[in-house]
Length: 120
Image (cartoon, rainbow, N blue to C red; front, side, top):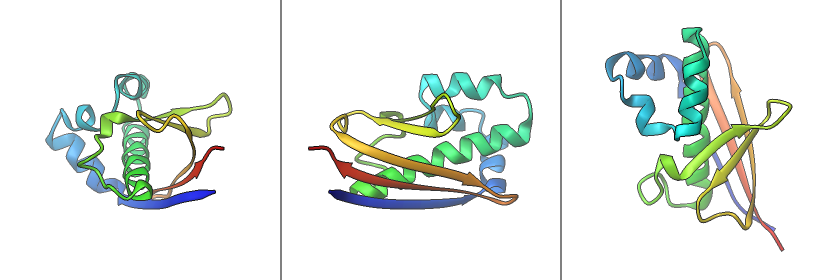
């Protein structure tokens, strides 16, 4: 049974501005594992897309559970990629839930959608 749906969108130039202005911005958003992946990306555009995608996925999850970021921390939510490159999400305290996540980018935006399903 579906328990929640969340969506989020952000401008890539907003993420890029935050990355340039605050060198700890990524540290606030990403888990250690996610930050390790970010550091392997050499192209600035790809780094911005990666961080924006993780940011929107985490915001979308917080909307799907109805709490928003605040009760949940960005660090409680981890977005990884499966062997095909598709995003997967793991969230502390939500191990018994099936979490569907989709992330996309355009020239100007990153968008993520999360659907939560209670496992039987």
